[in-house]
Figure 1 (cartoon, rainbow, N blue to C red):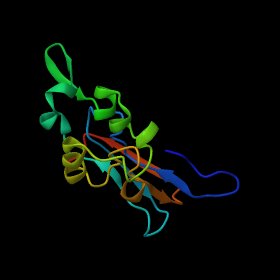
Figure 2: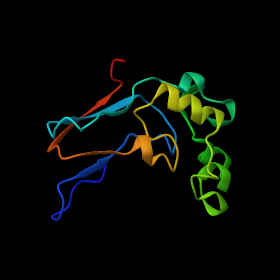
Figure 3: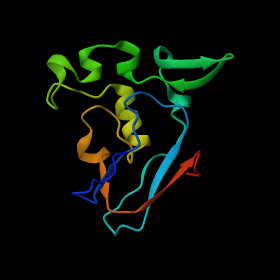
Figure 4: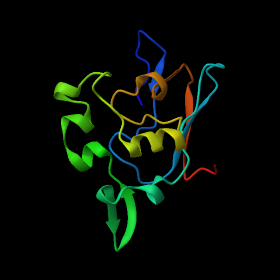
Length: 131
């Protein structure tokens, strides 16, 4: 979350899946006007995580790496030759994540739907929110 500065009260915020996922979370602005939206991934993505991205602790799935974290390539990280919206494409899991968590920032160049703005003075962060 990036908060407003002395020159602007506008906050930029998002729930990011860019580096992976471990628990459902939501971020809800308190006040700030009707344009303020919830940033969230309220569903457990660990249950549909590709086997190549699974992070286990004591034999149980504890998280899911993003395609970028798992593969470490320009194609999946939207870096280098793929650092633009035309060449940075979502993976199958990225598409699934976007369908399941439409209020989240799903990949590196997901500014159009993932990035939220608001002038709220408070935000409520909820881990494992009811969906």
